[in-house]
Length: 369
Length: 90
Image (cartoon, rainbow over all chains, first blue to last red; front, side, top):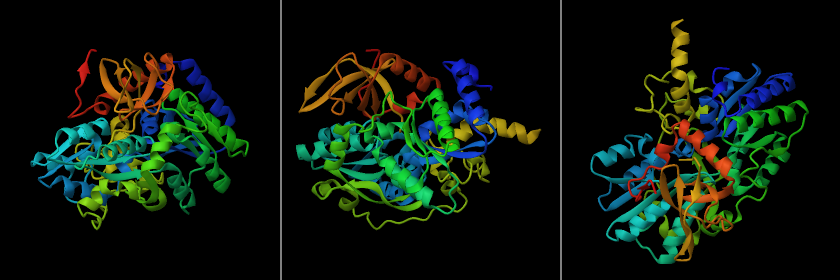
């Protein structure tokens, strides 16, 4: 209970934990989808406070982590061109490609820049008509509307020097792929609160009909996650499988309709390859035919780039909840946030980085004792 | 980059047909697209992801959630940009 005193309401946290203990009569394996939730769980030691039988495994919900190696290689190839300015979110620069990463491209003279919002990439393109500005757009359904808006605006303005290397991924098809696997251990899911803020949770009802697995859409604070875990355990113990919404402060059944409208205007659903997991049908967004002039993959002829993942990295198993980051022989030694072998060690939302940040000292102490 | 950060809408205008405003996050402000929250007005608190507000939340919730993200050390990288005209202390 070492972290409980940091909770905004320690008494409530204790109460929920005790209730989980009362409800749970047997072991359950739960997965949080979102990397932001993984971070909170590790930071507050929630996994260590739960009754022994309740196991949390960490899902594939870090967009930086699941962007395929070949997409990273494409970005590196495009960024290495002298006429290109490649712009992306900060975490993407250190994700290892097959041979190098974007940070090294930048260090050796490539024009690679970090933005907080795709709107800034658009502004840069307007102000620099002589540069070919490529926005490297990754993200789940939370991020896709912002990226869609940038392309929509570029088309409306007739901006000729702006394009997008798009690698958007979708949560429900990933859950379907996990549940369809013969190796699946997950019995209940904490749904991604901000993805559902945008998309609502209608799609998750289909998953429940198909797999009879409870899903509770959860927020990102420690109490949100404890409450979501309690709701899942109650459903499992009672033999129910429903979508419940714990994060009512932000999530509605319908989601954000203006955001969904721009998504369907600019993107269509496509098959997508996930790093560490492989191809998942219908799990991505790509640009619609009307926006094809903004497709960097086509403009720069990188469609044929392929890549093989490094053998030692076990991120595939980590991202599917089959292994913990600490099961990896390279964890904390040959793979650290400074020199990552795989993407889950790069982003602060990656499961390996969260374990490295919050658990490596405790693990080292355990080994010396 | 997947974080969403609560902030307070300081200004709101329609520019080139798109609703934008400056939103304050602790000590810094960022230009934010308000197109997905047509109901939001100046003074409201919104959850912002990569420069786009995606939902309106109440003040107490926003402040608590902001402090939590700050205490986890997650905000610095999230608001980082090589290009944005960050306006500290506004």
